[in-house]
Image (cartoon, rainbow, N blue to C red):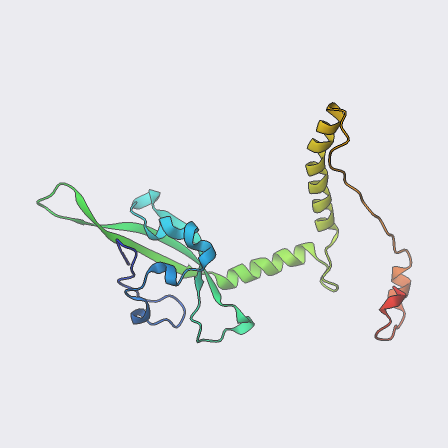
Length: 190
């Protein structure tokens, strides 16, 4: 839970070995990756409740620096849901805003799996080079980007504009070369 000035006042667990007493009294920005500061300020200062409250916002948190991580990843990706917390007093007709309550769920493993699947969909697994699907996608993007410039240039009879050039180098004998037993360091054959 966050105080109305953005300080953590109650914390049960963050999924990493931060002890609650290490973070209580700290501003929430001390554990959020700097790139996400602007992105998360509304979620951590959430005053709305119910369906209008922040739900499933992706946030990157800093991991505790003293704990080595496998793969050297110093960031934990989480989904955050938060809402305002209010106190009702019988003597007053309005409620008093106390702070923000939220739940963050670690999705780091899921994000890593998504990145792996995306890479495998657009790259050859053996060579790690982009595959035909990625090539066609980038070619279509380049053509779409060049079209407006080409149309403007042709309508104004101007020589300015953007062009797409495609260099096609066919390796007709690639399979024959690949099938031979080539010694290490003879990549110049290709």
